[in-house]
Amino acid sequence: MARLPRLVIPHQPHLVLQQGIERPIFRDTEDHAAFLTWLRDAAKLFKVAIHAYVLLPDRVHLLATPGDQPGLGRMMQWIGRHYVPWFNRKYSRAGTLWQGRFKAAVIDSERYFMVCSRYIELQPVLDGLVGAATDYPWSSCAHHVGVKPDPLITDHQSYWFLGNTPFGREAAYKALLEQALTSEEIAAIGEAESKGWALGSKEFKGLLEKGVQRRVSPARRGRPRKNAP
Image (tube, rainbow, N blue to C red):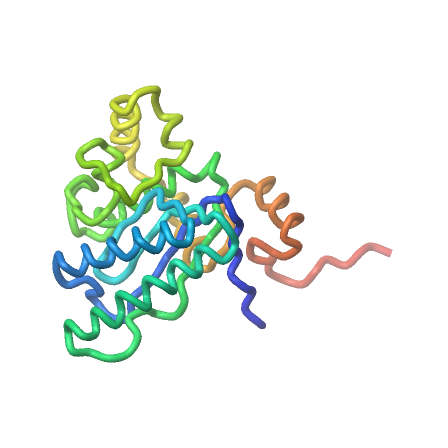
């Protein structure tokens, strides 16, 4: 079966996953800082708002809203064209660093934005790298809990709705981080992110399918039901 084209919807948040073919794809502080610099430059150049991120030893997760349809792909391609050759020269290696093309899943912001933001920033905890999300230096967590402002981050309205003041929003977000994600949430987000399916309610997916005239979620398994005579 032919692979469906990547679905990108302008002005809608997307969960983005870029996996590496080797571990680690970031070996020291300079590597992390270089990638984030190019991410910030590319996001500005291609009009993509970055709401959350985490750089892990074998992958990158982003929560981002593109300003137009090609912006997300162009941003990721631009970063690869800068970071991969730089990484290869530094470590005397050759070839690609990524495991195929990046994955992107359109998300229902009303229902899943804050869950996805927590999912991203809790990845170091789920991977056993740190005991608390705030202990990991290469994510947007410090920005959201008020430890250190991050110029890369554009706060989404869902984050602003957490409180009327910066302190209120930061405290509310920190409280959310202390709530463990359910196994159902982790499974649903992981499947959508890895396979590129939309993440949201049935109503959200239905409206999205009508708008783009294509499937945005897996087809039902089994043979189609026959109509009764």
